[in-house]
Length: 280
Image 1 (cartoon, rainbow, N blue to C red):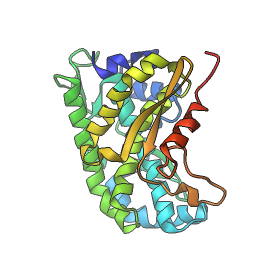
Image 2: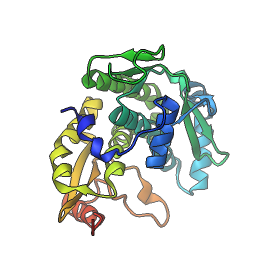
Image 3: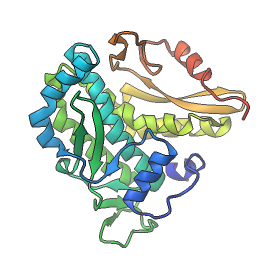
Image 4: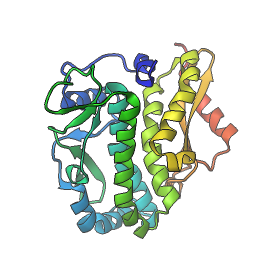
């Protein structure tokens, strides 16, 4: 059985229509963390990076009252959460991977530097499987397996990363920190999907497959993020163990994120066990 089929119990329900627009809207309704949008929401990513990244990071850092390297790391975390988590959710729920160029990604940023929206075209061509309801439409590019879909997603995420990594290096975001943010955003699908708790046996059985899937999307940086399981009685959830730090703890009044590598693994597991819903 394929991973998407095994994850089906976590994704109860379907959108009324099989369009990409309906699917992203359904994902947002299912979990508001999945915020990737269809439609042109602002400037194309490459153009925006060239003209606005520096001033945006400065404005954002001033708004959250931190130094620029911390602000850049936190801004990157927001960007990858919008884009990469949405792409991963599309793949794992609907077996679709949009066929995009960097110019087709658009950004909407507030005056204080906060990222408001990330969009992709409503008419995007997408890779899918033969059983996709729109497989024979002009928008679809049919591939033979989920493994190929993962290759397409991996290639695109790596292309994004290679394009913008130098810009963030100029902002003092180092290489592990940068690629760790991309991988973390991809893995958050599993964490957000199960946060309300599911059958412990299912959670524990699929954990190695979820972890292997995440490692396969960014194979050169697989060691930077892991999918873990926390269980209590008959209920379990997933969480992400990061091996890089987003630097959020440097903000006034903030502590280390629950996923941070600065927490000992046993302490981190205990923390997430305390988050497992009870009374199910």
